[in-house]
Length: 334
Image 1 (cartoon, rainbow, N blue to C red):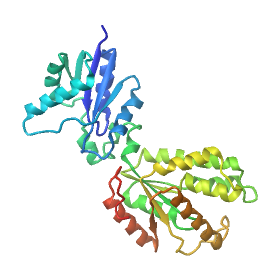
Image 2: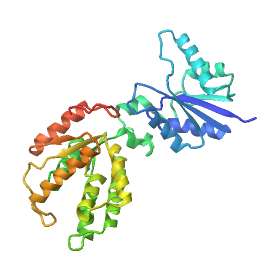
Image 3: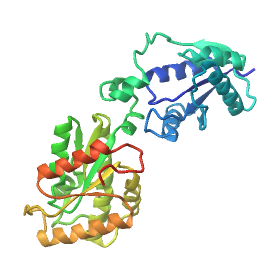
């Protein structure tokens, strides 16, 4: 007879203690089932938390447990409701062992008529909890998988024409918040690969991929925020400017960028133009700025305009960050 293990939790977020429990379940059982509860203790949506487990443990059956019973003053009444809810989700499936490190292992295993497989109750193996991580993910980075950690970071991207202060503010904010920033890969690429100030159309795919690779690395060591100088949308705009069209991969990456970042800031062209050898003049800057705004509007991307000197711009970003809630439909301070 097939041995089936079951566990449940909010996984808010998934950490090494959870992973240890899931690995043990897979080692001891023929099949594993995980119920992921909806919850208000985190802004990370249920489907993303469930996705972490699906990616790290593809052999596990993951059930998104929406509509689970709300906690009530009578703990015994809540337990009975929870038992009925889980029994209904399982649809008659026989469970061999219920895995947990919490008190509810007792009542759930009794309700399911299975083994109470309680693990690491005193957190001797992994002295960590979801609450500790939610309070300070960076402090407890060692307990969080690379699959999970980027979803705990607020990704802030700065767009705009050339010489609008994107790199300056990204670097300044990273220093202020003690975190990482991503410099513009395309500018460095252009300096090394341009021929008569031109790039091939294929080069723009390489720029977009190189920039994303740089972002992914920065996300893994970021402290709450990661500040990013441009993205694939900017690369897409440059491809149109150079060739009148963009390659297919870049077009797709630019489209995906719509949901890749939490906050979009548009740096204004109200600051003095820095006329370096690799740029094409202030008139070109203003034309490109208008094109960038049109593209953002066409993509229906909400963005916040930054104008004034660096101090004024940083103050505006601070105001937005103080109000912003990740995975929310409201952009604070917009």
